[in-house]
Length: 351
Ligand code: PHB
Image (cartoon, rainbow, N blue to C red; front, side, top):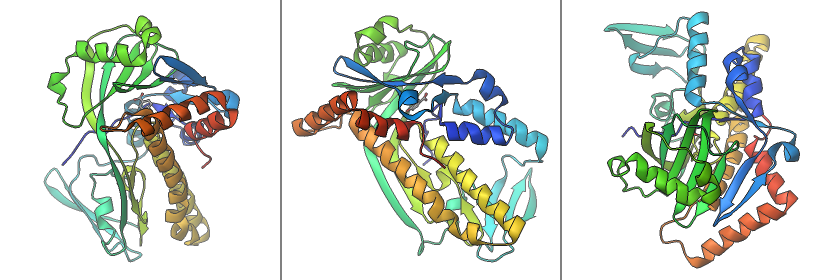
């Protein structure tokens, strides 16, 4: 079943640098918001993680849908992309002459390839071509989702606020100085029709705490939806001449906004491997792609899982678990080493 995924809006410096290198950072440079810190809140207390002070790096807030638009525009100028192809099938991926068949406007077509990059997401065909006897899947499904709301109101804070509240997690994010993005943790059985805008705003006001609530402007939602959270990795990321990248190979929960950034680091490793092949004829980079990409993927999977379990209330959670969460938050608030570990992951580990 196709289910929505959250398209977060926080770019690591490595992602911004990569986009710049390929000439895709024009609008991002003009409109992206530089953030030097994030705020963590719990039970009425809030503290700031000084991302830039602790790591020397900021993050850039820029909507993923905007970035997709920028990339599509560049693609349309440089190549002749085929969108909305139907009946896509991959053939002979274990040979050095793989090919893709598809149909477009009712006409059957074939594309002969040296390599096939499967960048077609979790619901694409790419990952279905890794043979079942070599494919290993690792998964964690979380017992809650995020209800997201987008509205044309100024953000309640100039930095993101992640809040662990007795009623559940909440996040105050933004897309621009005049557009806010908010989330609340909800049960998996919740239905969007039971959440009129006012109910979401009321819940946000409680969970983000009185200070943020006092500055929170309400407005009609432009978009509102519920997405489940999960961690998922399918290994390997290469079989023969098929190389997977991004959601085709792995999913992270949105806590920490790593999904798009991981797709960017995959693309970096993949381009390295292809450039090496075409320059030197060596397949060493292609052969090593999966291991190289997965080493970074697992670190981001680990961070996203850790940040998720730190900031959410789990149904049926016992008092011990809660006390440990609160102790960890207090530790992060007071330990430079603890805060630095969070910050270095949040701004992105090196590619
Ligand atoms: C978002 O702005 O959509 C967003 C930001 C940070 C997250 C997740 C989502 O961790």
